[in-house]
Image (cartoon, rainbow, N blue to C red; front, side, top):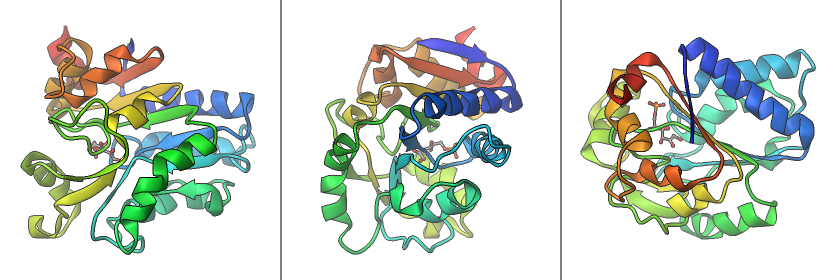
Length: 240
Ligand code: F6R
């Protein structure tokens, strides 16, 4: 596991360059994407590079980590909406090649097909992850099996509280989600994780220094052969 400590501005540029390098080497690369506040500047940098002609996503396929159960893709807090607004509408990707788990309708069928779809596409070449303050990656909350594939899960009180900042009221935050599993994530060839801010410090400690234990889902990443953890000083503060 490689660790890079710098400002959000610098690490967001570095991660965008990681994606650009993968796509320039393999134009039909399969990209694993995350939502949340953490990757916002990464996506802005990827869109800028695309506009400048430094990279094209026209042949790429994407798979997102997760989606809230109960939200239509048109809901402004759904992860499909987030991805369209923050990345897909600003790059030359074909939306038909973008996959975000469904949260309504026949979402369970899609969820059960998801790992197979990723495998059929050739597997994920580069996966970006954020991290929850409780150590979750995607929506794999503490206690999730390291062997998990894409599944439906219940969000912890901590995650609901953390994410309520994006809703009008905490009562509007969905309590369930569909998420790629820890094994699905570990199958990615290359993983980059971004964490900033003091509220991520405990989780980052568990990620880098903690024992590998299902009570700290991110700790499984210590076993992956190609992970780079990008953090700011605040998120890294307990590791010094
Ligand atoms: C989102 C996801 C989550 C977030 C995590 C951190 O697709 O998989 O694990 O990465 O909850 O969220 P932010 O970046 O908003 O702090």
